[in-house]
Length: 101
Image (cartoon, rainbow, N blue to C red):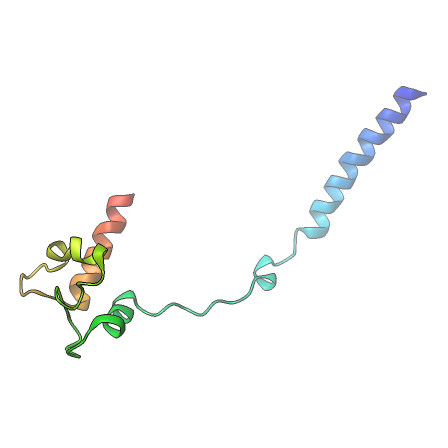
């Protein structure tokens, strides 16, 4: 009798797990998650935060408060004009992404 109960219990658990998979298989998880607005361009945000002379480029002086960008400024400034533009910034991001792969 005890073996029969364990067998019934095991079958019940397996059936319940299969049924729950079918019941929840079509739930769209994205509907339950809150929508987050698309972030603005990283460079656009940097210009907003640091571009004191409104040139739409960033100089080492303007980025002096940002220790991380100051450390990599020379790598960002591809053309050597002592200013970082959006194209140079995006090229650097592509380089960083590739180095992580």
